Length: 491
Image (cartoon, rainbow, N blue to C red; front, side, top):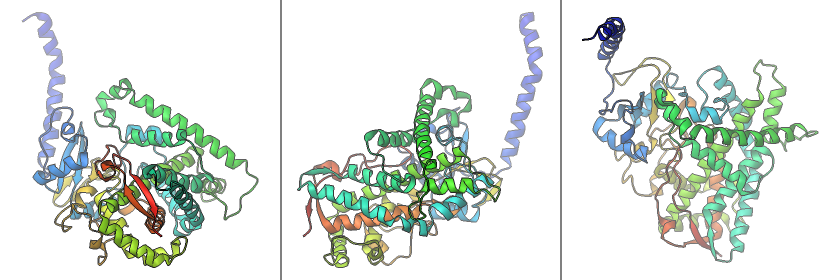
């Protein structure tokens, strides 16, 4: 052995021993912990190779082997996966505070002003303040009801387009996207923004949120996100959306005055910004982040759940007939079914619940992160563990549902199970502190549109793809193929 090699080994020995000692201590400390069952993992990438293009389905299969609470690794990050009613309840109710934070994720941070929004911000005083603003001023029942005319206007606009089609084939999916986009635009910004450029901008945001960021899960390989162009794309979309929102805020600030009835959500946020007597200052970036939240959540998930409901009704003519009979009974020959009559439509509500059960817009919800060590169902969960709730798997669990793969709205007619976060068998909007605050906003749009669509028209599918329930990949699960139909008046 050369003198150089001997010298190198002599100098390196203390470092090598230190590393081995630290590894031994870490392994020893973990050996005393009762961690949840884990599938074998590969070096560096962990279990990434096992998730495929549909992680919620892959995790469902893995849960069959490793149980309803398992620990996987995405890259070097430990991920706790809950796949049952009991495990979801433990995380989102019993230990809700411990699991109320969000992990730091590269792409959401770039898009949402370093996560100054509601959905991705970490748990703490800032999140409590902006969540309170949303609940009290933006998404309260009173505020949602105040925008009833907006919903009616956009619903009638869509119905007129369908009516003038005179039975020719129409892209109903495209009409639903336009409707939800217009409703959110008018409610949040005060007016619609027509054209494909704005729609495409929203689509790009959702596409980026569904992309896998290597740097978020393998920090040592963060450079991959730069080389692949992912960070550049995120920064470009963020810049484009920021310029758009800057113009919107400038436009609102130049107004001479707005009546209480005519205020949109940007008006409300600017008013809160001016009135910061309670010590919480709502900065400009915060306003833009909250508005972005409203767009991404309010447009995408609302449209998605409505599209799936219509698809399932077309695929199941007996359910469509049942709903049309209910609509005809409630409508009583009037030009439309008003919102105040929707509570009488029990089958309508059952249809929407069943569609949300089968097609949860965000199958794994938004990731959570533990802020303390916690004992969960006899397992030791370390602080800093990310958490995924496989709400899709829970909603299709045969131990919770009879014939879970079948579209059967009747299962909800004599059931108290709802989607508002109190029943852990059905979690399309999450639950606990991090549950979606916009449930009522989305439900009001979906009920009004679906009730009147089946009341006024008979929908005939144009081609097999309309009946196809194949899914797209991404943070939210869309129908892969659009709904193409011909619509004829019911009477």
